Image: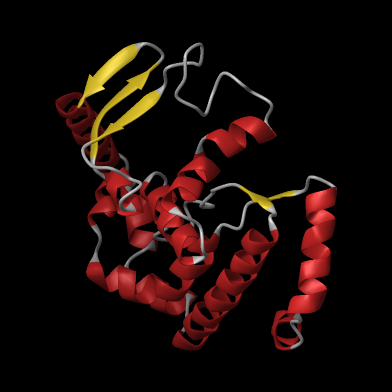
Length: 210
C-alpha cells in the first residue's frame, strides 16, 4: 500500500493537504532518522558503534550482526532506504508549505540510540530544507509552543535556565550540537567531566545487566 502511495504522489494534492494542516494548526513529527536507520541497520551492526556500550548485554546480543541480518534482509533494508528518500521529500514539501514541525527520533529501534539519534534527526532536518536555526527550534521552542509551556524552549529573562552549552556555533553547522561543553539542568551545572563520569557510570551499569 505504501509503495502504491509513493508511486501516486502528487505535489499539488500534498500541498492542498499541507495547507489544511496549516489552517488547523496541525503539527508533525516526521522521525526521519528512524526510517533511515532501519535501512542502515545491517551496516551499522557490522561497524559495532560505541553507543552499544550503554545498552544491556541482552539487547547487544539481539543487535549483533548475525541477528540483524536475520531480522532485516537486504531486500527489506533496500526498501527502507528508498522509503527514507520518499519521506525526506514529503518532509521537505511540508516544511516549504509552512507546516509546523518538531524533532523526534523514535529511539530504541535497533541502532536508533536515545540521545544521539536526536542529533541525527536535527542533521536530517537540515537535509529536508531546515536551516540550522529552524532545526534547533524544532527541538526546543517549537515543542514548548506545542505543549503550551512558555517557560521552556528559549533563552531569555524569566525562562527556566535548562541549557546545553556548546563548544561551537550550531548555526554554522548543526553537527556542532554534539560538541557539548556543559549542561545546566534544574539549577545544577554539569561540566564536561561530570558528563563524562555519568557516561562512564552508565557503561558500568550496562555491563552489569545481562
